[in-house]
Image (cartoon, rainbow, N blue to C red; front, side, top):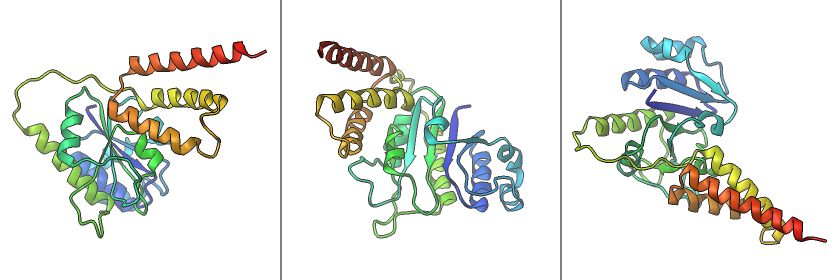
Length: 238
């Protein structure tokens, strides 16, 4: 398994079947579905999958995005929304070059047909790409977006490049979430965070750490520091 395609809460069996076919077209052998909103193996989905029906039958179901990408070293999300907050968006070339600079498995994450990925879901991924569509109407049909991204990925994989050292892989999303949960608890106790500002402020911290591409051992170091500070604060109280 080198590349994983992840669909978050897909609602259209025709789209699911079409994406399975695209995975077969471009040599992707792993399809993961997060909380699908329709029957995955219905007649419509199998009909659209054509010769990729076996791949569709092997698709795995996951309760949330974090579970679906937990074993992937590098994760790219796709975004066609205008209201993505301050999350930086990259071109397909920039994002895919970064993806292929690490070690597999890689994940490509696509959102819901009607509203894409939430900002919290985008923040679980280390990079977010957007396609070169018009700003007035940027979102594509789900299967069309998958086709464009997989084509760009295949194009980059086929390019002849001189061997180069791999960049260190970033920490998995679950490790980063654990650090941020511990940090939020400490900062609430210290009075830096308030309950109603916690989500927004910690979202910005996650953005910063994602841009820094923190490795697993670095996240573990930060988490150890946070836990020690929390212990010291509690131990100092009368």
